[in-house]
Length: 128
Image (cartoon, rainbow, N blue to C red; front, top):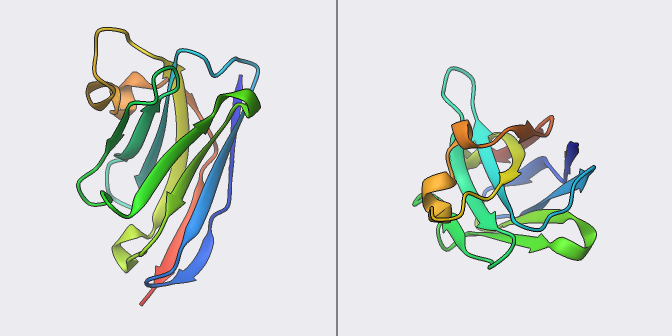
């Protein structure tokens, strides 16, 4: 079971980036896929999560209206489309996956402790 992120980089404020998370070793069906981010000295925080079965999503308030999470189950790949980027979006972004906990909302599950498989992270730097 492996997740590999790509798509990070340096972008000016107001710009866009698309992060990809390619999964191998498991089917995307009935999974929760999440994007989290972390800056030095701070705890890892949830950015966005998706239930790959029904497409329900959760977004942190700080990214609502700017970021979009997409799951392509046939390709076992998830994406985080980021627009109107701000310097405060600068962080290492991690993709994570775990079996979706039925009976919970995706918002409830969208916390780092509920995800067991993690990618290596990709750096996103937004310059002002």
